[in-house]
Length: 483
Ligand SMILES: [Zn+2]
Image (cartoon, rainbow, N blue to C red; front, side, top):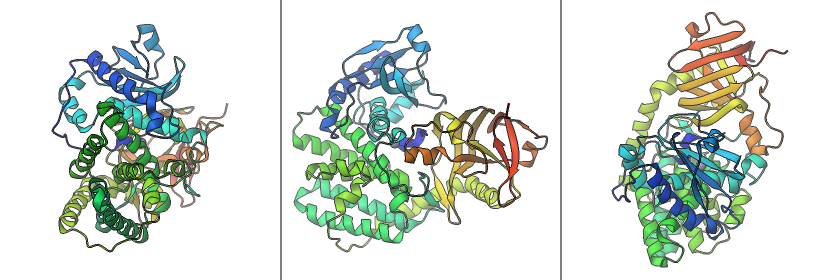
């Protein structure tokens, strides 16, 4: 499944520096095409074996569309646009990957028509290249290089579905350890003369986090998946801006600035969101040390784990400023999601509370968890989200979920539609999940075999089978009647 929050940028503030602001989509497409031309034909210089040569990025505002590859850019005709795979949600910027459009694998990014105003000011200055180029380079790394949908990289998923998220309520200690870890990596990159010392500190914080948080292993799979995709996108952005022949010192200075920006302006204390930044820093260090880390990533070792595997830890004390910053951020995050997560947890803990079960196999377009992913202590198999937006097209009917609290988990329901035959193990695990939406009593008052709800947060026109799970909970399975 695809995640709109995949880039972890939902609440990042704007930075200062700004490239030239385009007046319209055509000018923006030219800037993006320039980034693609410089970088995608040499993707294997950033990631061994990465082939972006044939990939296509389509930028569209619905009225116009520009198709961009490493060697050509053209405006799509209205006839061509009719077949363009389009993102389904209308947020600020959305994307839709495709396997074959005009013979290319790639990604459509929809840019709202008002993008070249305040939205542009918010997004673009955060990136070394254009925002659309960053998004495409990152997402296509998932699709083209990791290729989880077709059994590409082997992930340490074990028995559990590919889940992500942070224990709720957020705790301070693991979040402090992860920011201290990032700081040590930043210093190790910025000060090569004292690298061994800083890497020793990094190894210490990594060990503290891994041994005390319970988050290492499967829980931190995003250190591998998001960490590598973000590393690739950041380096691609730097190369798009500087070229591949830039002086090593210029490249390093640019990326130190990038790491500092991530620390100062973009750090959100959630396990999966931290993975993006830690992956960039660990990748830059591994790259500079000439380590053969990329082949190991494909075999399931996160860059940070690889980088520090033979580094002796040196004991550290937490920095008071970091503790204060994280304490306050954690309190803020908890307060922000509590009004949605607490009732969700109560509903899922109460076996008399009915839920609607929607198979992930029927989800179409981008999916937005809103405010991140969480786990609760005594609900290890549920992935909680405060404010999901998603759309389902099922044999049983259609469902729109709009900024509503819900969870991914198991349900005693058939997968309808069934998962495609050729998916890999990690993807199959993710696809066998159901989105569980607790229903209010008024929403199921008249529900028999059809569930028709039109509320602000849930629109359904779907056939259901009412069953009970093993706790006695009423579960409305969205499943088509047998014909
Ligand atoms: Zn991603």
